[in-house]
Image (cartoon, rainbow, N blue to C red; front, side, top):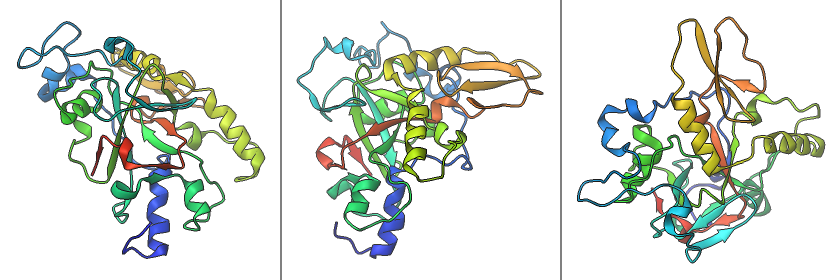
Length: 280
């Protein structure tokens, strides 16, 4: 990769493109669709129409007559669609603003960066992390921006910088709970092969098709607050549950919103720009 950024700065910056959110970082509580007043027009259900009379579509690939001609890449975890396809769901990955070559050269995994001599870490992920949708709305395919608004609400501005967006098939793409990596304590030395194997087994406990994940988000959004209770999420099932505030939240439960802390794994060593719907 060629860049004006020094090799040391590039090393520090590029790691963020393939790194899950730390448990110490601030999380955002995303409101259910029906509470987003300014965004309510994007929250209508199936059968409604958007401005101009164009019908909205379900996020499921079945809504597109099971079309497979627009699949660019598929493995055990993900099915990436053609950026110009009018089906599927958009997901994003953030990268450090110091990196200026992502949009032209592609998004590389930590393992690939290590192979190229750019980084050196104890734990090297062989995949890049993308955020799963925050909301379970039907998708407004009028434009890329309305698609983003449909799946992420107003928390993620469509013009937000340092973001890579790709389009995936929710019936062939799997979602995992990000907070497992922060909360689970594998009984092995950090960075050892035993540690990595144990962590992967635990993360796999949360594996679910995105289509199922979106249905769970919809159910979670209907849970009403109660005085004296808090909402905990099972990191394996992604399901929310009200419990007394006096009860300590213990693993595998977590109090951070599951909808903003779920991930998709892209195992391509270098996700090149031809897969990008948008790169800012």
